[in-house]
Image (cartoon, rainbow, N blue to C red; front, side, top):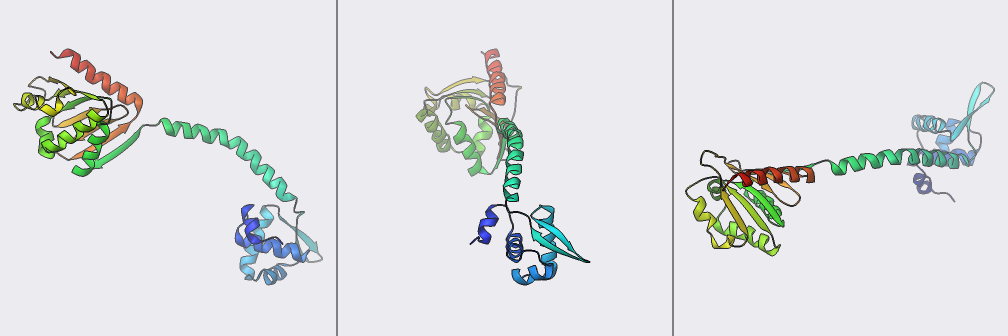
Amino acid sequence: MIHISTLEKLGFTANEAQVYLACLGLGTCSVAEIAKKAVMKRPTTYLIVDELLKKGLLVKVPKGRKMYLKTEDPEVLLKIADEKKELAMRVVPELKTLLTQASIRPKVEYYEGKDQLMKVYEAIYRSHEIWALVSMDDYFKVFTIEENRHIFRLLKNNGGVIYDLFVYSRRAARIAAQSHREGLSEIKILPKEFQISSDVLVGDDRVALVSLPNVSATVIIDQSIVESERKLLQHIWSTLK
């Protein structure tokens, strides 16, 4: 015995399956007879019958002045399945193209608040090589020295190194000499007139643009952007003593 759930797997709705099976069991019949056998209100039955007619699963049978219905040969389901398969074979390559385009599109993430910002730094400091343009004065308005040691431990555990371009400040040289940076950080200090209050961090696979005054960050995950930003910071590095 065919169950409604079986027809649902073939693309029928529950109501369509109920009406289809009722008509199949009755042979040539009226909408009223279908509604009675399917235990369905007649207005609803009319709507379902229209859908099945459109799909080619039912056909109209005129008898005198009245119109009756009957099911098409069930083999029509195979034809419908073949048509769907043929359509799918045409569409799937286009869908794959869209998927490929989506996968190479830059991924942009936004973070806000100190805890979220720490996650941004942690992800960057798990890189093998980091290029950074940073304002340490503004950084230490948000984070503590222990939190800075924490991210450097991540860098060390990953065998990484960071090339720091420090915004000039009286604290810059003192910060550069902190023991937890030893062997992990190479530092150059930017000209005094170059002042910013944000960080630009370039890791292995992402760029983080950190607004320290707003305690927020935008992260871009895209290899071409990573390479471009890295080259930009490397160029700045090469111009400094």
